[in-house]
Length: 379
Image 1: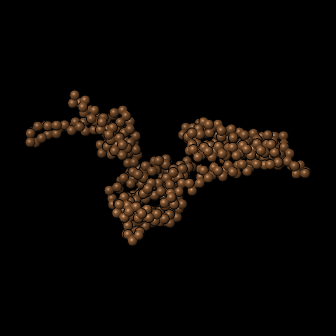
Image 2: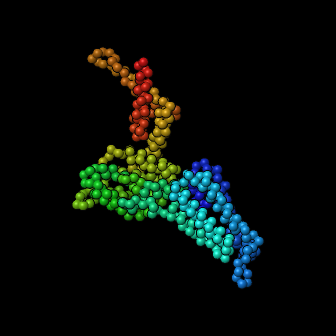
Image 3: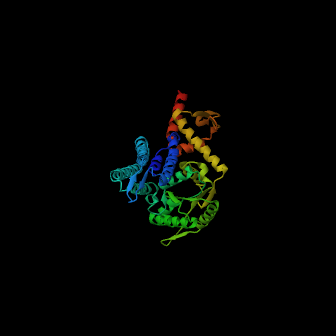
């Protein structure tokens, strides 16, 4: 388990490079299990004499060598890649290592005191509390899991290639509610909504990923459809909070087979994109993912990636459009229009790349590039 915890700090190409370690993680314990099983007949590792005394076998040193090997692997990988892990995870792995090392050396010094099992148990307890304890990632107001835990949890689910479905609920009128009724009523509304979502979905896999956005993960299509219909019906009714009648207007985004998006950041970006498609609606709206919406999302993602390159390498073109005056019966000026051509997608509509540039904070850079081109043209 100590090695398994250490393997979690290795990411990207490193995982491909060290696939042999995952094989070793299976083969060596299996070999040791066979050796211990065979020891019941052979006594090569250890045995007990007629008086019940512990006696070392001829190959007893292999037990210590087995533990030392994995302890050295943990040290090596912590030194090489420990900086890529979270600070608390690094601390926990080192605590595990020192506890197990202390117990091992005490057992070597006093063989009758079998402490390696105790050290292993304490180490596993520490690792569990640090890496898999959801209590550390609970939203204090709603009691739901937060985005940090979602990133950890969904990453493991995607890694295991498990099928799942998502329902995201984004409260679009919270600013208006806070402004009219006050933040106290707004907070109570979110608490009541979170409680309702938990009861409707009957799932512990519910997250508050942003201040006004909730996300439920459903494992079966039947549960997904039941939760989708239940949440839609739940939000049709107004909430009564502190003698105020408050309506919860939300965008309900449904994604079936969300594992196809492959990355946790891609999932959240896709939800954000779906919400943007109905941002002008004032009532509660259900939008379900389909091939057309997904294609639009992929297109916007590619434009967003290309836009960064276009700004860096100045790939924009300026088209000059003459302005004709009917009164003067002549052309009086020019309009400078910014255009962007993708090598595969072709010409990108201005409203698309300008909107993305505004969202990504690159609109000033695009404007500067346009101005420089116009100044050079005038010269």
